[in-house]
Length: 517
Image (cartoon, rainbow, N blue to C red; front, side, top):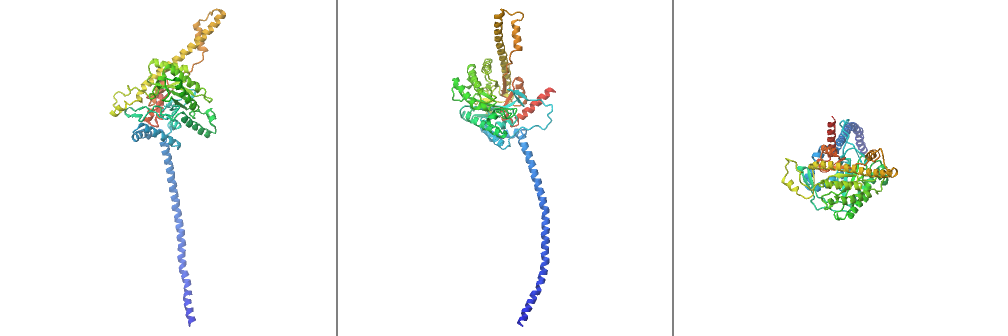
């Protein structure tokens, strides 16, 4: 019986096996179908999700591109109406605001996020042509940025990107110097004016030369040329600006500690700057007009100025480069008496300088407040600060000085040419008279006139750049029509923001187009 019980027990257990299997089978099949269903259902949402992500990324990229293009365009609203007032609010000290602006432009340029002038989308057919020729270089427009904004040649390319054809860096002294104690720069917002007494703070000629040399070498790598080849014009661009149709000016000055009464010592300061910086400049600017360096303006007297400029010109002609840098002298707006101006003109012609930058900041405080304009007590107090003033009300004085310098420079040129020709004619007359005793049939005056008009070599006109009070396109046209080749801005850029140059050129075109209509 025991075996039977065992069999009996096995029988139920073995009998249940097919039943369990039968029960498990229908449970197993739905699981497979559920997995298939879940797989097919997740395939749809995944594709849709990927599509939504792609649309989002594309939209974000397009939005980013639009924001980038707008934010880096000089015509953007906030470059004029947000950034300048914000800098004045965040940095009550004007020098700190200046340093922050320079540092920001330097960093933004390195990231390719700097403001730059872009071609207008509007139809420009028939627009007035702003191009000019200066020192044999064809420039796209007659607008320049004055020295002082980029004192140490840290951001020349970022400034070129704003649309100016000419950028002036400096002033640079042969040895580093701190300049005057702070505070040394002051705003007069009610007049859109500035007062500064920096005192030519400089890191020295060696430091600036190192920076400009590195700039040339970086450019050379991009075009596959070495430094010497770039400087000798093999890249097809000016050796200073490194951009077609642009010019880089480097302003040089003496150290404060150099005795201004020792003309030879002063000349050595300037000559050293030429030796270090001449290779990297299209034009060297001799600053003898800063009001913040004691005794510097005394160098504008005829004799010391002639010696100083002559030494600079001679050294510039020795520059180790195929095309030598031109030389200009920057003169004060306060030296405005006829005798003072005639002396400067005489020194310019005697030394061989190529041109004059008319204007700088002024020590005077008369005539700088427009009629009917009120200023705050704080601004009235600011106007009593020692230093050079710059602002819109300087324009009238600048236009007047340009007209007078143009007349004097051209008049001196003509007189010098007539005198040279007169001496040549007298030598010819003496030679002929010695052979034939007399000349018959041709009056002496007629011979001189004929020789002057037919055989005399043309005397190249001295170039004038103008700075002081220029804030918009109409101001620029006034100084250009007065006889200047280039209109330079500084304070107008501080208050008008990064779009100032672009705006000025648009205003000039509008005025010129209206005059043609």
